[in-house]
Length: 480
Ligand SMILES: Cc1cc2nc3c(=O)[nH]c(=O)nc-3n(C[C@H](O)[C@H](O)[C@H](O)COP(=O)(O)OP(=O)(O)OC[C@H]3O[C@@H](n4cnc5c(N)ncnc54)[C@H](O)[C@@H]3O)c2cc1C
Ligand SMILES: NC(=O)c1ccc[n+]([C@@H]2O[C@H](COP(=O)([O-])OP(=O)(O)OC[C@H]3O[C@@H](n4cnc5c(N)ncnc54)[C@H](O)[C@@H]3O)[C@@H](O)[C@H]2O)c1
Image (cartoon, rainbow, N blue to C red; front, side, top):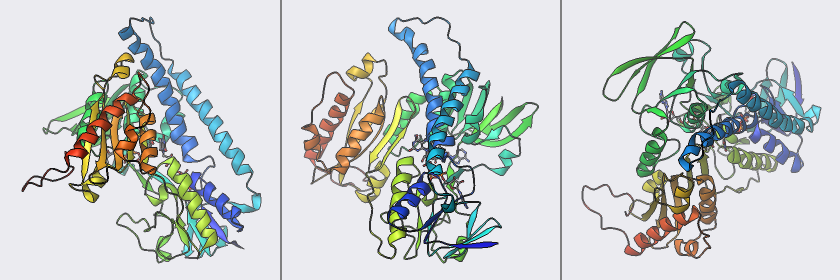
């Protein structure tokens, strides 16, 4: 085994790792980037980009299906599944190509291929071929889908989301398990492309939502179109000829057996930290076995080990992987002089229709941090002018503000064009605006943002009334 020495070792050449490597080099350190799988990043190969390509095709099909509502009759619509998937794969490959170009810019001497694991806090072993001595390490190993072995045993047609983007045609039927972001985005897209989809949700949670009222509105809006089996647990999956037999039990205890061509398992992702030899590092772990990390410095305890991206299990989203990677790489280079980096207001968007978005503090966070100290304003999009014009008049937006300061705290929504509303709200939140200051901003007409203004006016009224007096026995969450 050969041995090399460097100043900063980065494990994983995904989005977080590439940003960490560049930040460490920019700070003047020698660095080595270690990658165990294919280059190209999860985002470009099997994440954000191919999923949005599939959704874009589904939106095109849906626009035709919705056209008669406007008196426009497009005639017989045919979805060419092979062509849909060919475009998804071709565009995906193009995006991956851009990442590969940037990896090419990394000098060969700074790149190492193989799986790294710690043998000591300052020493990594890469496969069986190289020992890397590094006084500072960034863990940027990403995450993997949770795939129960008992389900996988039913055969190769039980998969996580990665496999979908390599399909060369659309199957006739798919069972989607999980009502998180991946299950809802891909389940709705496949349904709109003509695939028979049933989505199994063990409860009634929807994507990242925690506000029960918004969650219910999302469940109603999506279930209008998609076959969602709420409170239904998948008990077993078995091979049945060319198909898969899914056995499930619903909330009333009824058992069902149904056949599908594929099962898409979307029950969450877990950080890739369990094969890293972390037991040799002395780091303190949380209950999931992920090292405890300072979210402002990305430093694990007082050690010279940093963690970034999905591996940190903090906010497993692309923009966070970029920011965390930069902070981790910069601080690894400066260790022991670490400093807080820029963490932005939380923002998350599920690209369903209507879109599901959260900005700023979530309802659940506020129930813990601001119990009885925040007010809620809301608007339904059912009668919102522009939304009705577009025949997209469904959804609910709830905005939260702080009693006493009038400060805007956050929002949860299922709404038309929520990606844009959520950006506005995240910016307002990060700028520390009060609700009154937000209402002083311009609102054009007729726009979906007028719905946001209605919700803010409602919030303003609730804030002016002050918190409701606490009542014995009544859970005192928001002042609503
Ligand atoms: C279907 C899907 C859709 C998504 N859509 C969105 C979206 O629309 N918007 C959004 O913001 N986010 C989205 N995400 C999330 C986003 O893709 C991730 O948060 C982001 O890509 C994580 O980047 P990362 O650098 O942490 O991990 P990765 O890009 O996965 O990089 C980790 C790298 O580490 C390597 N590695 C692992 N272990 C080792 C080891 N021991 N040694 C060496 N190398 C190792 C892996 O091979 C991998 O290349 C989506 C995710 C999925 C799955
Ligand atoms: N648009 C985006 O930004 C986007 C898109 C896709 C993925 N992502 C990222 O990827 C992450 C992973 O997505 P995900 O949807 O796999 O996970 P998730 O954590 O968002 O959702 C998993 C869902 O599966 C359910 N579940 C768990 N175990 C189950 C079981 N045994 N049976 C049935 N249901 C079960 C959970 O209750 C939850 O609703 C997301 O949290 C997000 O960070 C983001």
